[in-house]
Amino acid sequence: MNDIVCVSPVDGREVVRRAAMASGAIAQAVAAARKAQAAWKHVPITERARLLSGMIDAMLAMREDIAPEIAWQMGRPIKYAGGELGGFEERARGMIALAESALAPIVPDAKAGFTRYVKREPVGVVLTVAPWNYPYLTAVNSVVPALMAGNAVLLKHAAQTLLVGDRFQQAMDRAGLPRGLFQTVTLSHGDTLDLIRSGMIDQVCFTGSVAAGKAIEGAAAGTFAGVGLELGGKDPAYVRTDVDLSHAVENLVDGAFFNSGQCCCGIERIYVHADVYDRFVDAFAALTQQYVLGDPLDPATTLGPMAQPRLAATVRDHIAEAQGKGARALIDTKAFARDAVGSPYVAPQVLTNVDHGMKVMMEETFGPVVGIMKVGDDDEAVRLMNDSPYGLTASVWTRDMVAAERIGDRIETGTVYMNRCDYLDPGLAWTGVKDTGRGATLSRVGYESLTRPKSFHLREV
Image 1 (spheres, rainbow, N blue to C red):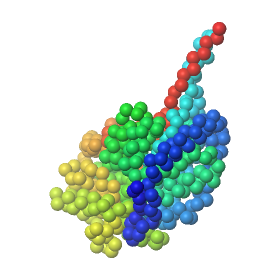
Image 2: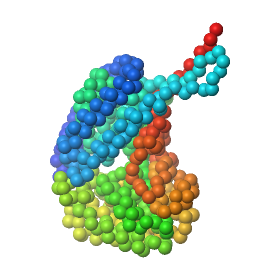
Image 3: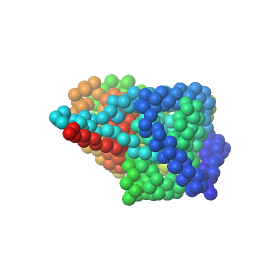
Image 4: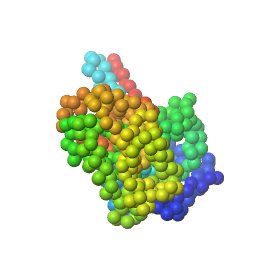
């Protein structure tokens, strides 16, 4: 039996170790979930909402303990760690509020002598496989709507954030959800794929790498289980000549470096109109230099370590490869004492003289580095933004909303932003194109994959 271990990027200590569940225990968990779901699907939506609202309250009550846990597990500075619960609450309450209308029957035009409607039925048992980078936000995208739709949920959290699974379980239990309806399961990667292959799962909701997404889709083949995949990203921004420069710089620096760049929708490449390029780059680099790289438990730290040394190595590799091909690094990493080869502590970096022949502009770096390219017009910007195997979000920075909508229509992406980035609105579908995956969470659309249609065609005699 394998152990699942979380090693802290802060100082390399072991935070938590758990034995992976045995196959018999996994089967028992699924059986308990299916038994609980058989009753839960008949519970009124208003009662489901009451219980899950209590879960949210219970989670928020643990905020002071959760913040340092996140810092120890994956390195986000304690200055920001607790803030994730604000987004958790917004999404959870937003999806609860949408449930009644999203799950309401679809009634076609009246037809004499008939009663006709399409009911939304829960799919059954949902497996959420959550990542470590935003361990509460990403999990809640599927966990809460799945339960609101009448399903049971098994949550398999990442090894790097094992304690987050515990917090979800504690909050659900304190809110009084039926026993077995929600369970945190400790599984190895192999056991997760075996569980999906078994046919015991009705819907899989996964956030993670493209390679892992392909493995999950392969495991689900032939089981007829639904699969929702939010995978990689290389999210671009386009800064037009009519931009509010200070607003764009402040928000794009944050979008590139928050959470040490470990964001699914973080800004990884920026295209700037030639008319404002020099001013933008100078201001962007100046603001980047103000970051404080250090111990995430120190309130003064604004940039913590990356979650694992191997992830930091990828960032350094992308930077070195770009510099070897002529890129110019604008940030002197010597000013960041913690930055060192082999360490998870990585200084923020801004690269110019970049092009699409470099990994830093084409592959998902998922770290604190951004490449900035000069463009001559909207057409060039759109062409470069679309020159990517990914398509999660894209942002346009302009004062012209008509232009933003026109440009957005041409970008191959799941979400188009204007004058903002790196944010999920629970009222809008969270989805992607190309290698970023398939399916959608959040909004009314997010309920569709968690339910199945059942038609009623009733004739009066």
